[in-house]
Length: 113
Image (cartoon, rainbow, N blue to C red; front, side):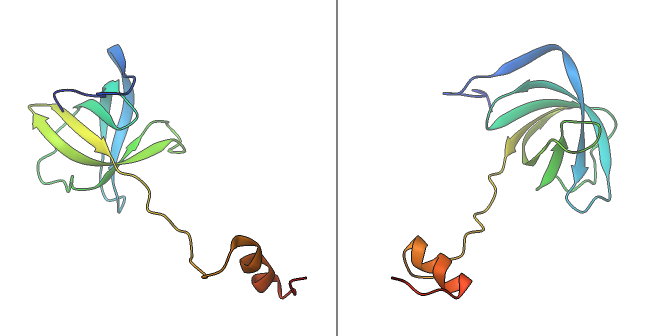
């Protein structure tokens, strides 16, 4: 992530912004400082050890209540600083095979026409 936010706007915090990272399964949590963020990536300074944590996929909690979060994966670690990349949500759309208005009518039990 040497070119954080390439092609997108990046926000850098001079003192860092207090956030947390948490395991996907909720078994671990670490306080961090958010140093920089873009639409696709972030730079964090982790408080405490990350040794032994599964950092393949985890959550970046942006609010104290956990209502604002991003799903992440580790890109690089340099001491206590780590670069993360945001993972995109998988599409949950079902394919029923017909045009949208026919799909709605089929689910509602209505007739076309």
